Image 1: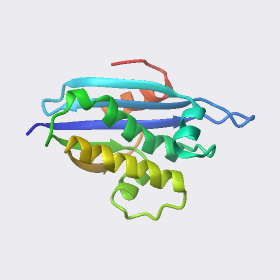
Image 2: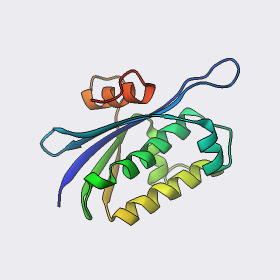
Image 3: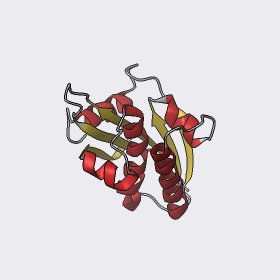
Length: 154
């Protein structure tokens, strides 16, 4: 059984006209502290609308979606029964995934279900952790920059 840390971040830049860039960033790190892979993805609003039947895209939406996209994108790097600690700088990821916060938006519930299905499909052991944002953790900072499109890979 191998152990990994997965740092995820979602970004949502608001513009006056209601648009703005949506992004996902992630860094997969092995138990030795080496980067296995990274992800920087700009997300089209139409994708979220088609998948989750909503135009109400917020930063929490992108934080949750970052976990889902990362698990899917890194699936070729992971094996059955790998242990993964997922770090997100939005507390809602941890609380929603552990069913400790009530979900008031149907699309957040749907994203959580998709994450749970992906974990089950890959037979992974996943723990969710909150990490304070912009507090100097290099991998969390990388995930943030990847989500914002400031860097494309690490």
